[in-house]
Image 1 (cartoon, rainbow, N blue to C red):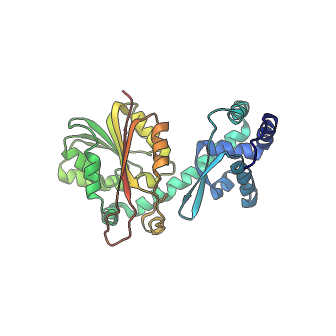
Image 2 (tube, rainbow, N blue to C red; image 1 turned 180 degrees about the vertical axis):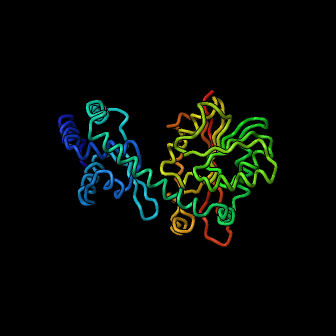
Image 3 (tube, rainbow, N blue to C red; image 1 turned 45 degrees about the vertical axis):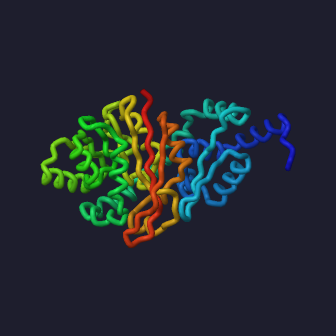
Amino acid sequence: MSPAPSKPEMLQKVFKTFADPTRVRILTLLEREELAVQELMDVLGMAQSRVSRHLAILREAGLLEDRRDGTYVFYRFAVPSAGPWREAWELVTRTLRNSPTSERDATALGRVLDARAARTRSFFESVGPEWDALRKVFNDDSLRAHAIARLVDPDRSVADVGTGTGILAMELARLGLRVVAIDNSSRMLDAARAKMEQAKLTTIELRQGEAGALPLADGEVDAAFAHMVLHYLPSPGEAIREMARAVKPGGTIVVVDFVSHEHEWMRHELGVTWLGFAREEVEVWFREAGLVDFHRDEHAGLSSGRDLPATFIASARVPA
């Protein structure tokens, strides 16, 4: 084992790492969002060899965490909690905040994330009402029942984030809950509206909007629910933060999704963005959103003629 570097050596390494403007740009982007190499290339306008070389230096310095998602690898900046790396990074961010380069990179990052979202939105706009037949591959009726049991008492309000054709929203309404059903696809909302009118359910309000910018006021609902939604979102952690913002103190947030897996067919046939999530990253998202009493349990994949990954139900509360 190599001896720990001395303080002068450590400071020299810190200054050398942060002296390169490209590495600073990469870290700034990865502090905001988990990104793949191709996405960094798109934002920075650089070749893969150059981006990969800087990523290798940053990883060797212990500043990056990576996560494999099928055939892709995503990177994020693991900002140190203390010490010279933290102090130097705070100095860098204060100095370069609102610089022209940072603003250009932020705009380009927005375009990359919009492209992620557009792929999913295009899939759902093309599928529309046919989604009910497609989603049967999930075979998740029992999961919905387990998850609903964690929500709130009747006569309360709940947000159904990514409502799709409204199946879950209708179940919640039948339990006596007032539901705000949210989706970014107009075709999905049209299908949901038709089903709700046919069922004569009047306690569901449909709203069009993004999971990362929910059309809800702060603390508007008593609970929020995202059922098989996170794996379609460009930024799942952002959606968790938005749900936490929209739920009243003491309220509950429940997420149902897939455990990390390698079923690439789901990208092509179901249009998913992410191949499930590890417990650790879900717990980090909940914690960074300020939620408490995190709980997660897993369920084996329920076969419906396809090889399905395991699923999880995660829940937590907004502090009272």
